[in-house]
Length: 193
Image (tube, rainbow, N blue to C red):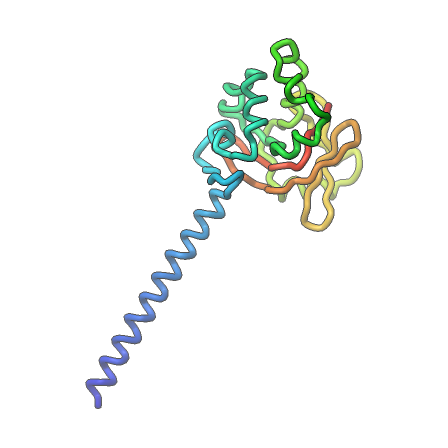
């Protein structure tokens, strides 16, 4: 009877150790996934640049095409750091028909560059920092974009909203997509300077 008890205890300890090891592996996998969130069906790697990640997102093909047309690939691949409010394809589709096609024409490069740089803020602003900025109140809750015009930051509950100078507001739908040269916050609309 004593020998069976010892074998049972050894089996139980071994099983507990395997359960703990499995829990550790699953936790590590979950942490890795949280570190590399999925955007547009592709993992976004914190070790890659804004452009390297964006080209893999099927939800950002319009943004990538616009960045290429504006000649901003090298800038957004540079050291930064940058905070980018990245409109999805669906966000661009909300613009009047023909707008995107018109903007990517070579003769409209200056206008396109102005719009795209209005979605970029120097430095890294996480969702937590944006939330803190939103709490400062009107007039003090602004970020200055690379384009030069301000963006307003507000919050409702745990959701962050960005307002352009024309008064249009977009929601951050996927926050804190960390990059080697900054952070992307996916937004559901296009901001206009």
